[in-house]
Length: 434
Image (cartoon, rainbow, N blue to C red):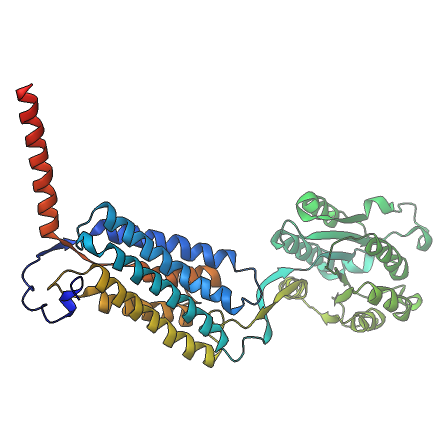
């Protein structure tokens, strides 16, 4: 009891033997920076692990505590203004016990989570499908400003899409097999194969703006479209066909069954936006057979909105149950993590108070560390709106445990200053003798 007699029977007698000064700001900064660095590193390095095992979650809990204890002991050894030098060994013992206890707490946090091995799928973002645009620019599309509306809608769409999206375009007009006109538009001027949008956004806009009011040929258009899709390469992705037309002419030769199997084999969905209420139903049947759909649109605003809606795709990922990650959706994870975080805060508060507090001073840390643990729990449980990323939220929460508020030992500081002053005085006297 001699080393820690401020917790024993002699505490009252020695209550005034040591005087506490102002808060040790250096220790506060060192502890907070150390814990924050380790907390964010642990959260970031494990963010890609689908299901963290119990031992890894134990390390994620113990690492910030180890950083805290290490920073405190190092700072106290460099400037021993907190406790007598005779307590070094006991400080180390308390630090090691605290880290081991934090590891056990973290392990139990995962083991006790009854949903730990279950997985769920959630939408993490909203992206854009790779896209093949088939734009009808036949003569009938020139009626009532349909062509202008369709062209403007396409331009607005590609202006909003991500630069790295793969986009292709095909103008359905002027097929050599279907026209007696002299002004046939060569296929090379009506076809853009798949490429990143940043490479050909301007080309798509220019092609969409081109006046090409001749006849269309749906069978020939989908023959070429299937050829373009067969040359499409993107790991794990499936493109979408977006067709804009009035649905008139040449549809008597077009049958959905002739193309449905080819498109389904490539996992390609067709979305058909038609601007004439009296359209032919074959393209609509093709869209439905591929898992897509068809929509009648009557104006530019509706066309633009529907185009963006069908091309946007939700991005999902499989998330495995983890006591820290599931705290917002799992009652068991919330209860267990809350209790164990509070235990961790109490543990830190007791350890630092015994290791560093002065005889007779108020024990800030006994209240502060549990309070920071409560804040950490609230941030993990309810902070997704403010900090959306799980690993950033987790790193921030555990960083709060690094807040240390201890008062300096004024007597020790005075003795150090007096010793330094006497040493300088002795040196000056020695210099004068020489």
